[in-house]
Each structure stands twice: as C-alpha cells, then as structure tokens.
Image 1 (cartoon, rainbow, N blue to C red):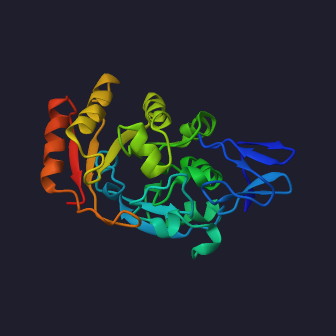
Image 2: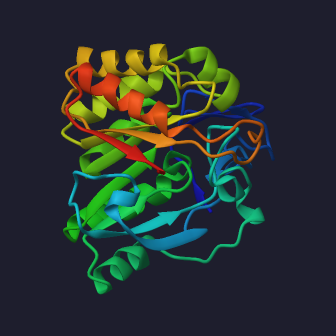
Length: 287
C-alpha cells in the first residue's frame, strides 16, 4: 500500500478528496471504493502495486476505434470502484476490497518494462475504475510517457478536478462511460451524479486528450429516445460532434437480471438519432 494523495486529515479521521463523494473516513475505515483506508490519521491506497487483472487487448476493445487502431495495449486493473452500477460487468473485481481478489505485486517500472518487452505501444488502465487507484496509475503513466508509450484511460469519469489535472499531462486517450443523461438514474442505479462526468469530459477534450464516449443502453431504463437525444444534443452543443460515440448493448448481470438484453432495434434507432443530431461517427457494441 502507499499513502494516498488528495485527502485532508482531521481529528476523527480523514476526508478523501479524490472524487465528488469526498468520503469522511474514520480511523480503520474505508471509503466507498473500498480501496482507500485511514490508518494512524493518514489515508492509504491499499491496492497500490497489486494488479488483479492484466491482459493484452486490441485497443478497439476499450473501446477506442480511432486511437492507434489495429494495435494492442497492455491492459491492467486493481480492485476498486467509486460507482455501484447494478449491471456491472466486472463486479468480481470492481465491487470488492483488495484482499478479496487475487493479485500479484508489480511495480510501476515492471509494468512499463513488460509493455516494452512485448512491443506494445500503449498501456490501458481499465476493467474497474482507475481513478480509485490513482497513485498506481500515475506512477506508471509518468515513466510510460518517458519511454514513449501512450497512456489510455477507461473510466466513468467521476473524479475531482485536482487529481484529473495532475494526470492530464500524461494522458493520451480516454473512453468515458456516460451512464445516463439523467441525474436521477445515475444516482439511483450507479451511486453518482452526472454533472462532474460531463465537466470532466470537456476538461479532457480541452487538454488535447483523444476522447471517445460510451453509452450502455440498459433495457427500459436509459434507452429512451428522449435520453439518447439528450446525450447527442449535449455533445453537439459542446462541439463534440467529432467525438466517436459508442452505443453498447446491455446484457443482464450482477444485480440487474430481471430485464432482457437490449434489442438490436434500440441500438439501430440510437445510431439514427445520433447521426441526425450531427454526431459524425457512431459505433454499436456488444452485438
């Protein structure tokens, strides 16, 4: 473990300043993400240097279809997530504490060297929520950039401004998952608010990061024409028409198993809405 950044100490514990939850954590307690703990009045990143998943993936799997297409990346993840999506596809590692998942020690330098040895041009921080293991991601991203590697973020984008700005100089590309263009849905089904995610997408785009956006269309929840139109209108209204948009098909999983997979017709309709709204590139995923 490593002492975390972005927190303030108090008499009865600490306040984590990594994401908008700003968890107040008492001695011996942990934040919502399960991976940051208060010990002796300090906040520690428990999963630091202990990836629970590593793989070599095509970059299109992130999904990033317009960033170094045709290449492969070293994908890695530690446990932890500051969201609680009921349909999480990786709940066995995102919704558990570090000690509950198998992991092996890898220093940041070892990750970078492994990537170079295999001739891979990029590293993807993915599978869970990388911002909950910010320190490890950052300590890999800095030497990776120095060695000429690209850094890829796959995230829900729920992070505070200071940690985001600290990472931006080393970030090359990101796929951000917008859960729904409805704050009530985001709160009830994912445990987060919508506004910080939208703001952070604009911040990354302004900083020159290659952005692609994903919207998982969950049957009967966020798949209405109204919400799809709202997403496309927001993109067009913020000059993001050139940002690739991925509509992904939902399959029942985790704690959301009482509905059917997204009909393909819903995804085709979403693509039509996006194109008619001026979004230039639309991809359909999980079909």
